[in-house]
Every structure is written in structure tokens, then in C-alpha cells.
Image (cartoon, rainbow, N blue to C red; front, side, top):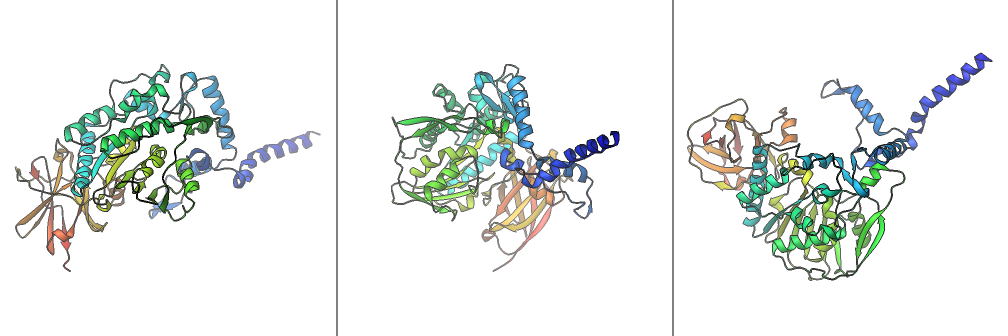
Length: 488
């Protein structure tokens, strides 16, 4: 009897251990539920050598595909947020049923303050983008979207102490000093917050908030537009918030959403080609599925709109789609870190929208834009350092010169200039003060915060060999690299 019991016990034990592996092919992935990229399968050999992180990567790969993960997450959410009122699944349970994204707490308490140099680098980058757009006869507007906690702070838990200033407010003052066209959307939202502009159980604004934000954007651009004043609407409890789904992935509740009675002008999606069914595609792009929406292009059926729009956006921009499409003859919406100014159409509007918690990403990748020519003569000497490195590649229709700058070589105003010297002649360009994180990593350079990036239009250069110098802090470095411009 004892032997039979031990055998049965062992069978149950090993069966329970094997159940997750057996169920794995049939389980829902974490990516589907949590809207993120799953950990990739690890390799024993990586970059030509033994992968010393194999065990950690294997654990992450398995955890992401663990069967019943959704059920376990939901149980944890019920206990931690519902009973203990503690953060769970990167969700902060607020007062009166409000939920907040855990990733916005650092902005709220100002525990993620960017350095003065990074803030100035962002301001300079945006000023150069506006200069490039203006050179094509267009108008530029930067729109930082406020975290929900910054607008409805009265519902945040009392143990989170709101700071008097943070990256958002410090950046706004820098942008003002650099003359950048910026819309203080936080001020706009707070002014009308009593109307209820954000979802209680989602990180984003609702359609009412988007309508108010849209009018503020168009007013700032001075673009003729429909205001949709006094439009009738219906409120439905049918919106499943992203924070709600993080807490309760199997049985999320519903939040309120505004639906306006607006008859929009006819239009079509000219990209992607799969968006032939206009209304079905619009509903998909406005949902939180985030499928096939990295690049969307539209055109009015008749010329009832005015001008063209390029909007660099994140998930907040999806609620703006019908309003913006309805007021431009053509519109392009791109989900990318930095714009391609070289491809910007003549005389259009560019709106650059990004949520407050992601402002730091503006320092990671430079826009694609031919560097503007400059006159610069305040050189006081040469300066060489191991931290100054330059690389040259051919891409995006020109020569891409990027690299790193030694800390002692960084200028206070974050301006960086590239000097190309050939046979005693010199041409100077202003570069973006951006350390190209991924490109530098591919070159074996890691952990550098100070860098530069410039696309040079070779049509402005005579054929021949040029020396590349980097100018900063009123000093000119010795030759970092050479490049050869080929003749036709």
C-alpha cells in the first residue's frame, strides 16, 4: 500500500511539474496580453563567443511563455491592488478607482531628472528640426503629452509626493529660450480637466481629451480647421483600459468612452496597402492593438482639407487620427523616435508628439536631416582626446557622420559643429548633439552619453578627400577621420 501511494504521489508531483511544458504550445503569449515584445530564445554562442548570459536569457524566455501566466498575473493583481492597495504589474492603484502607470511615477516625483546637458541637447535638436522644416516653407510644433498623473494628481496615492518641477517643466523653459514652437499640453489639459479628459483605467486621454487637444494643436499651428463645437456625443462603458488589462488580463472591466456624432469627410488610406476598408482600418488604428500603424498615409476623396500634415506620434496620437485626417488634404502619421525631415513635403505642417515619460528617448536617435551650413570662426586651439571618435557611412541619400565627444569637449550650449577640410578650404555644418546609441553599439562603443550625428548632402561637396574635425567648446579637435567624396 505504501509503495502504491509513493508511486501515485511521484506521478502527481512530476505530472504537475510537466504540466506547464505540456500546456505551453496552447497558452496565450505574454506579448498578446501585455503588449510588449517577448524575450528572444537564447543562443549558446553569441557574437562569436560563449554566451555568458544564457541562463538568464533562458529564464526570461521561459517566463514570457509560461502557461497560465495571465491567470497568475490576474490573481496577483486582485490581491496586491484590490486588497493591499499596492502597485502590481507596473500599475499604481489610485484613489476612487483610478489607475496610474507605474512608469510615470518617476516624472511625478522627479526622481529621473535628466542632466542639464541632455535637456539642452533635446532643445537644440528640436530647434534644428524646426529650422529644417522652416527651410521647406513649413510649420513645426512640438507637443509633449502629459502623463495622466500630472493632470489628475489628486487621485494619486498620498505616499507619492509630487515634485514642484520635473523634466517636462525644465525642458519647456529650455525650448522657450531656443525659440522652439511648443504647445504646453499639460497646461491645456489641466485647464479643462473638470470635464474628465483621461480614462480612469487607462494611461491615455479619452476622445473628449483628444478633441480638446486637437483644437489646441491646430490653434498653435494657426491652421484653418473645424472646431466641432457643440457636437453631440454619447458616453459608452465599452473601453477596456490598458492598465485594467495589465491587472486583470482574463477579465478586464470597462471604462467610459466618448463617441461624437460627427460626419467626417470621405478619405482613403493610401498606406498601408492592406487598409482598403477605410472605416475598419480606422477603428483598428484607433484601438490599442497597435497593429500595422507604424506608418499611415491618408488622402481626402475631394479637396475639402487644406495643406499636408506629417505627424510623428506615439500611442496618444491614435485618438487624434479622425480630427487631423479631416482637416488636411493629405496626412502622414509615423510612429518613430525621430522624424525624417529630408522627406518632409514643401509647405506642410509637422507635429511632433511624444508622451512626457519618454522625453529621454529624444537623445538616443538623431533625425534624418541634412545638416545646415554654418559660419564659425571662434577657434581657440586644438583639443584631442580618446573620447572623440567619428564614423562615416553612406545612408539616407548622403554621408552620415556620427560619433562620440569627450566630456571635456562638450560645450555648455550643446552645439556641435563638424568641419570638413580639404586642401586648405573648409566647410562647417551643425550636427545634432545626439549619441546614436544603436549605431555606436554596433561600432563597439557603449555607454557614451555625449555624441553627434549629421547627414551631409554630398551635392554641396567637391570630389576629393576631406578631414573630419569636430568643433565644440570653442576648440577644434585634431583629425578624427577622413572621408572621400566620389565624383559623378
